[in-house]
Image (cartoon, rainbow, N blue to C red; front, top):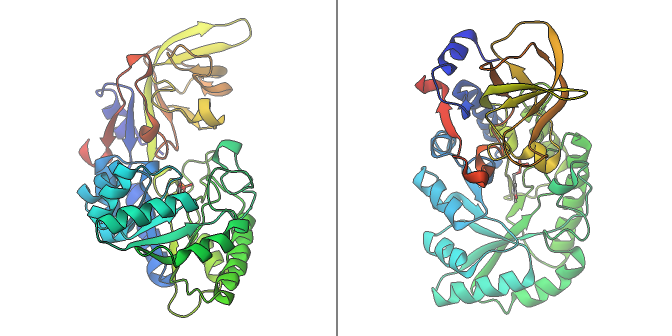
Length: 382
Ligand SMILES: *Cc1c(COP(=O)(O)O)cnc(C)c1O
């Protein structure tokens, strides 16, 4: 809920902008902290979900680690106060430049997605006279039941090492003098709302863990990745971290001394952010009414890219309900936030909130059409 006082303040701020309710962020982080302290699981915040420096600073202050997919993210995380020794580095296409910089920064672990990548990390680490800690990102072949663009753990996904390659990987391990294998890593997709998917993942991890132990490989770390979904229909609902942690606790078989790591992104930052926009024009179509707003797909690409649904609210009208197509100004038909949704009568100048936009919103903004990047506003500052 965005309260009346805040809405009045919005009137004085140039739109569009991201609004972050830091009370919501902090209460989410409090829950995650409590659950991780109770379980002993290590949290690495997935920086790609939202790398706004102010947001990173708040998250790092909770003592969590970071999960990064480029050296620029690693650098942003370090600047925001994350400890390099608690940063993991994922991605199918790590460049030599990024690997070298990450080695230099002394990150905790490279989550490796192919044998050729491990070979390169080994060579580059040798040159720096360092030992790189790695985890194998394994493709567990689990259907995440989410949008196909954010499903990553099925066969012929570009992500992860296939299980039929594992024999080969461990055969080669002894050749790699500058690599130390510390664990296995998974990430099967994002916006996963069926808890049963995580249960299947746990079962698969237990099987794989057994396979490694029969090959006399001791895994210090199991990293289950991120993916916990949020309720886009009900932006005021928080993700159920308690259920998630309890499920992991119940279904993953940790051996003594082994650490469990998670990499939540969306579930931490999603619900605290809204994209705030003003209505520019109301335009009649043949069968619909268009509410043309000043935010576009360059500010929030999820609806255009993933057919994602975000709840849209008119914060300044309480008139009769009509149906609208809410669209942006960008020269693409996919620049549509929602079709045929109910809103109170909407006029030029009304303030619109696109809710649940904290994750993969600002972080994915672009300058297409040479539009300005969206600004961010924190609840503490207004
Ligand atoms: C994107 C990503 C995450 C975070 O996913 P969420 O769905 O935002 O929780 C975690 N780990 C890896 C490797 C990722 O690529």
